[in-house]
Image (tube, rainbow over all chains, first blue to last red; front, side, top):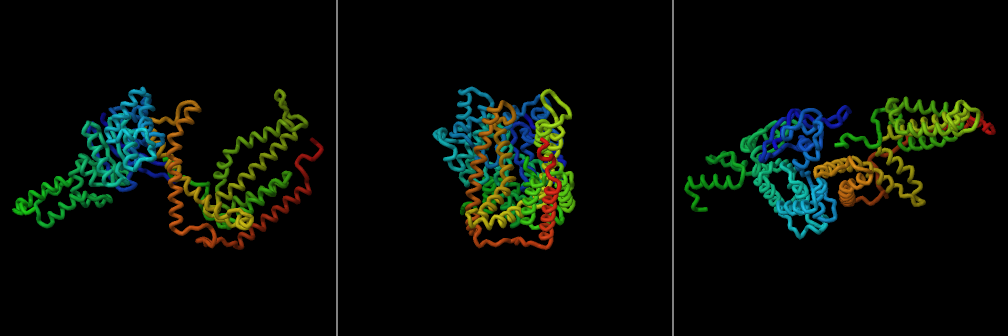
Length: 288
Length: 276
């Protein structure tokens, strides 16, 4: 179910004095099973862009094609689009409202009109996917910890069983443990074949998970390509108010000191392998 | 985002004589004007009050277009009251539709009420158009202060108004975000009958209230952290001071009031007593 965006422009408050163009002339295509990172400074238009992908915002001009069909053409049910493309908002825990965790996760499937049994199966499946203890289901979501509520909220989207999952800053405001768990869940979801689009300010997260990265600056797409390519371009990232992941910067420092390590290293594991290789070459590996 | 660039109240920021008046003077003038408008009981009174209003609008540099736009929501009420008067006042008939008889005194009475409403709305909307919400609450606080002796919490009222105004755009933005989040989960806010629609608001209202309470809590904490302890002994960054212009405006208002009272005594009601 590829998503194709062409020449998308969005202007808020069009025709008034406070007109703001949040997105201008953005085009890209996302294939099935991709893991795409969307990065950019605050106010670069990331949130506006993703709200176009499931029809929450209507483009001022340009088109959004899902499965080759323009989602704003006549006869297309946006509800069906939203069923295929799940969007998890930033701080999703702020959208929970039901009396029990179960009911909150079931909100989506119930809206889609599934039978009681099907709803139950979906809630269970969603809980499994995000690693939520089933004993929490009868509890009130307002009693849970921040990381747990966020998982409830993500499960609420997963219970719709979308083909594409879009997450806006899913780890913002979580402690390191909660962050790692959520990221691992997302990684597993991608491994089951889901297309994932991750919006994040955390370059380490994006570098670790995403194969492809899109960079937005003031509403225009300034880079779209492999993660390895963009994260080695330090100056480019700095000019967009971004920075490479910590490990990539470390490798650069080592290179400046004359180490013959690769620069396009994105994860701690890769960095470890590179450094060990180099140490072995220098014949000091045994000492460590 | 429905809330982008939203204007709280309807403040129209330009530089004008009316804008630079002290908010207290403007509030008092508005109140006097409202009373005077109801003291006036004939078209001569309206000529005086109307001239005063036109003068104020001209000096305020607010385009008439904006003021007329402000009249739009009350057009229905105006037509309705005018029609009621037209048909329900006894007297010589102009025309008749079934049992409904339009009378001459009714027409005059209807026009009279309609004009009064128009002048009232135009002039009072001038207050909010030329005074920013902050100035307005500051002015209101000062005006209410003498009443704090008899237990009116003047400062608290003004602070509540300021906070409320400050959070309208924030809450709108939040409502928009929650609505979209629920729509992503298949919620439907647009279709269905009345009951279904009311029910569909629960997923919007519960999170909105939760977050509003949380915000209130945090704001209270943040204010306490900055040693807020109510209005006592609190000074202002912008001190309100009455200037020559304010006294002049108040003077003009009093002259206008006197003229209206004169027309009332001199000409009497628009439809003389006893003719109905």
